Image (cartoon, rainbow, N blue to C red; front, side, top):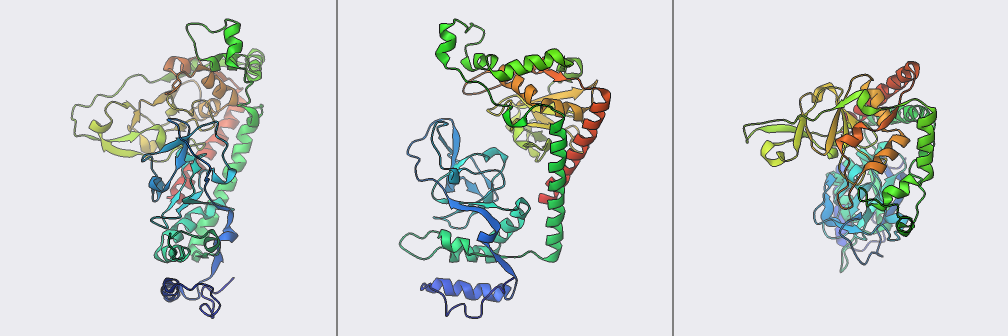
Length: 433
């Protein structure tokens, strides 16, 4: 462990700009002798974005720039998109809980990447930090946004004709270690993440199919189906026919034939009755698909908004243990498909029309969550979704989904594991706030 300010900090410095030393004096007075680690010691990846993107498209992979940084979150302001066929450097692809830092312009803006931008691409004016330990994200974020952290980021940008953060300087940035109480908080968070991962593996084991290949579909060219006259007037999207010819569809048929699978609408009801609010000025607690924390099955954030603002989308009052499933958007049937259970604290809040509200009647809602996350159920969702620019799935198709009807003994075990998993996810969500 190092003392925060080396005794000979000026004598051995290679920096000649006076601003560096002025900032160093401020830093020394603020946190003299506080223990620290170098940022590069915390990072698995510390890199800037791609310089190879030359053109953009109307829809595709989000391309993030400085304009999209609104600390502590990212925004969709003038968001650009990169073609799905573009070859992108791995270093420029961001994942959930990466940290992004503005490298030029307004230097030192720091955000945490959320689920909505998982897989996005960053340009050359942003720096990506992927920490070795995900539980360190919050305290590194808080430190970089503190007064001292901002001074250090400013130091990492030598004054030149174009001021920008140097990756070398950033790698050697000193990150103050958290206080003892913060360390205990982080250890608690780390332990909960470990338990969540263990529960996830136990839940996945009950699927009895390979999670890694649940989207492994055999792709056939469009002209194959045209030449065979297989496209009907009812479905003109050739991806539908590709999936019907895939190995995964054969596996689905065989599974349903040899195991006991049932239609979702025989054990659950999809709510269809929408709300009616007379007073236009009324504020409501509004749940959209963006409120759902991906792969956690919990509702992360509820928006308090005037009803007038969302009246065209606000539809269904929810009750405890209702299950919410996204019905619109590009993630239908994928690992990012919005899926969550309503906890007691969210009773009577209003769900968006972008979500199906499902009431489990003959089975546990926790078991229903497990079913809807099943690789072969997700595959059915991908088969039935429609649309090119705006993908969606109908309530009728959701009701007709085939789901596994495991024995009572296995269902009980799954419910116990899923309930623990979701409770831990809620604990983590509260600790991370």
